[in-house]
Length: 337
Ligand code: TRP
Image 1 (spheres, rainbow, N blue to C red):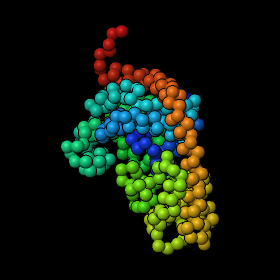
Image 2 (cartoon, rainbow, N blue to C red):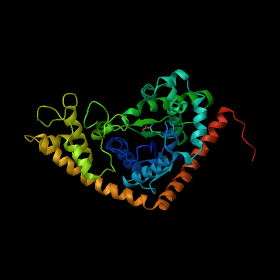
Image 3 (cartoon, protein in one colour):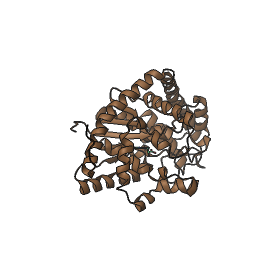
Image 4 (cartoon, helix red, strand yellow):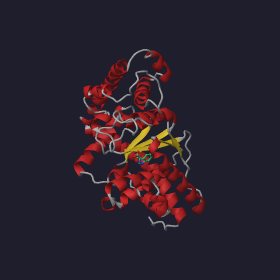
């Protein structure tokens, strides 16, 4: 299908309830920016969420919470297509075709799978988790996406997407756009506030190391103030030797749109306390309206569900066309209508 703007597509899991600062700065902020320049599709990936055990009621509630937060962060349903993955059945359908194109060894090399399955043990690891990246491939290819805004940790999954798109196209004839990862370097990775050698993440971070966007603002402020820094007191961006301070500077710069160089100048001769106090304030000023906007959507689930229904309808027109093309190329006999 011809489209004049480049396509962007991304997905985010609904599992945490509250998104964390790493989700926002690493990915969601990019979603918001790209809706101005791209034909953008964003989805809450509930089918990916069930690759690990979920409480059904919580999953359903968290899917709304995720969508509400995306809207609160600035996604505008008039300027992008926001939907829930399971509302568009073509994801599972193209996922199957992609499973049949993926090598077992190839899927076994996905580092996120290796990490997660090593933690859970083989018997508690589902086949769904194994093919998680392949479903992600289908998510992306269905929309002929040119760019995929994601955090640094998703690079390998985008590489797999490119490989499978090329494999399909050369085996069966052109059906898919080969997408690129869109990773904004500086903010691609936000680190844990207590252990800046690891990424801020729901699975790896301790509660003190992670800023949950829906927490009470004063809780978030306190976490910033007790972030781990290092022994000397100079405020300088140096990820190698001063990862804690550098992480705070990245957060500060991104939330305020200031350059790191300007921040270094501003805090010359001042200690970490001043930086942390100011950043805690920046944080509170950001999360306070974010929380209330999210709550407004959650208080009106009918409006929220209508936005998601419209999004799914828009998404399906694109997804159905791509799926029909892929089925045809593979040689599946079309059903007679
Ligand atoms: N695996 C992605 C993550 O954990 C989520 C995701 C699912 C996704 N489908 C996608 C991201 C499609 C980009 C495009 O962040």
